[in-house]
Length: 433
Image 1 (spheres, rainbow, N blue to C red):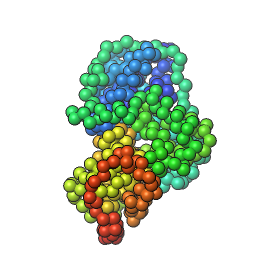
Image 2 (cartoon, rainbow, N blue to C red; image 1 turned 60 degrees about the horizontal axis):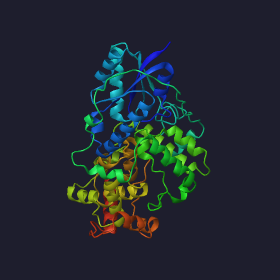
Image 3 (cartoon, rainbow, N blue to C red; image 1 turned 180 degrees about the vertical axis):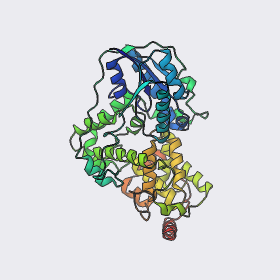
Image 4 (cartoon, one colour; image 1 turned 45 degrees about the horizontal axis):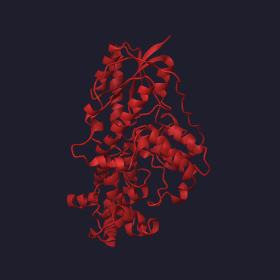
């Protein structure tokens, strides 16, 4: 029996390996909708990526004969209304693992239950279903290495096949993508277009190039910011332009890909930690840091944000972030360490700034990354591991090509002496213990 399905798009803006869309297509007629949440609006840089991705998704679906509606109405109201207006039999979507979006999903389930509307949520953003990969006693892993070893005993689900033919449910537009007003009032995100092409097609092209050219040298070259040896697909994964399972299997076909595959499992581990600790971005996982004597210098924080610390590698990274909405991972660690150890400023401040300015902002990765560097997480670098930004520059950008690209006119006076900052950070940690 042919069914009519409303597919609710979320952080899965693609056509390949889309379990909810695939099942809807196999079942019969399809109508698609994307709803914008208030939390999404707060992600200034990421909203630029979202707008561009929605434009491409709408065009790609249109080529298949499928209508994509967009709305900023509460989905607990919007989805049941669309079901009724278009005589839909069911609502499908792929799970999102962001904290606020999980709350929205629970509210949507309740609203659909109250109206006796059938629905199904699919796993579309994980290598393994979220209830898998637990310890023998059923508890979740809190340390990455045993989690990774456990993952090697399991098989990643294969990407789902998509229908060759589609049947549409005709519908009038609710709002245009422009009506959503995703871009900030100050147009600082416009310059991102010089560095990125969002969307599914560009994401596939970007990863294919990396897999054929750079994945074999990933382990050796990934820490060198001037080498451009990373895949740079993180924003495509953030908004689901790329399926992580499709990326996994494509990478697995290449030689010497294990170090890269390990990073995909780290992404998985971060999402598991967020499920267990919804306050991952706000509250330290190690309770001793609840009373840590962080400084409260907004002036130093502003200089860090603007790339005016006087340390070339840190400043180059912060300026790359502002210009492109992205920063090399090695430099992210150095910049984050400088904020939390040299300036002794709260890691939550840095996490919030990255949330606003990263096109690849991901709640789980952001929280895990900052807690790892700050030493406040359960599986983190110890607090006394303090990156020396000068030796990091000498080791990973010896010719200063990265620095010259993003901070060619470095003139800032050093905010703090490294040795003094190192001693101050250790004294603060000792007092906390």
